[in-house]
Length: 159
Image (cartoon, rainbow, N blue to C red):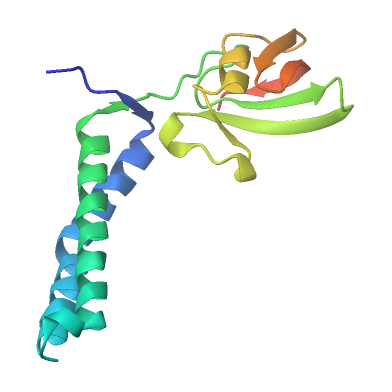
């Protein structure tokens, strides 16, 4: 059997996934089953759009349950490092984009917690990988799909 991918995440994210799975397998599954039962009561299933919608929703639900179970089963809990001075998972990094001449702040997280709109960058992304292990004051060149990007690390917080 092929090795499953490991999904890096914080303990908090792991617990969120466990709560989501519990909700999906209990409350949400009962809601969908009730919708199917109600739609069946409308009669002829071949022309019953409510039934088709409920069955589609059931398929989406089971797909999400399988996805969350896979994430939980293959989770790699990343312990927060309090190593000073280096960019690690959990670090909040303030950088100066030398090309755009702007200062931005990002938090380096596991891939399951990434949300670029909230400034949470995956350690697996080109930008996240490029910053890992570097220290404040260093200039980092990141190879990205858009080309080379150049940043100066201004500050690192690992608290």
